[in-house]
Length: 326
Image (cartoon, rainbow, N blue to C red; front, side):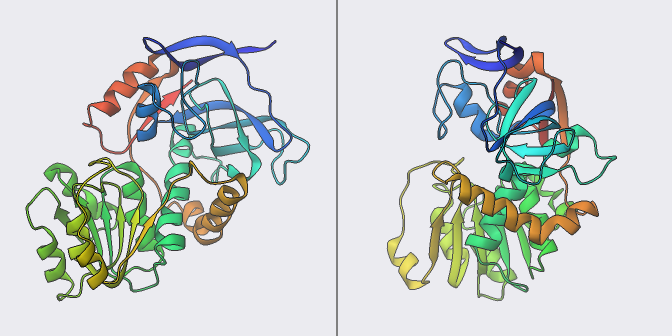
């Protein structure tokens, strides 16, 4: 049995151990991982919580990675051994990982580093699905991204700009991070830690409100989001870093006739995720190849220091993506 080094969940925390190398199923590719990227969901799994099918002692962490294909199952389409790829999938904090072929994309530039490539799959898939498919953003629509300084938030700003949004607003409670949102497409940064911040959004939109809100914060901003939304606006609930439960103004929801949409990858089928990736590539691939969409890298850790990398994320002092280099 072939083995590899991987960062796994243990009863006492995250540790790098020797584990069995994964074997690809008929629909999967086996990737020699050259870089893996951290996501907020990894913190919950590392703490012992479940995230979809992931969780529990022995779980190999990681939701996105980049590297070379070393084997491909019999049902794999459009991916071959030797291809340089970036993937979303489970178990990326390792020397090898598997991914469904439909969650695999070619690294778009021969000169793109592995560290850069691994930062793209989750942010691109998540935010194209949230903004375009579920948020139904059309050219000229005004948009507010809550949690805009996170990696996926920064990507959402760029996708909104690329897809022709009108007014683009980025929400953050951190002054230093707000100051950088313009670099990624925000026309204005909103201090969402300020009481009654929705008044600023209404002022900027001439009292109308924004057509699309991508919410990665939820409970602490839910009602202000609805005050900031236009009549017939769409609010897409992507993340809940500000709380999973809270009060909800049902009358305001009805008065503004808001579509309030919840999304997660955890309950999606393989076919659904393949379609998300296909739609993203159909709309955004020219921009990705041209280098118009990308994320800053905050810090790169060796795989052996995966636990330290997770602590760095938990401290919430980073800007951009944290990467592991196995």
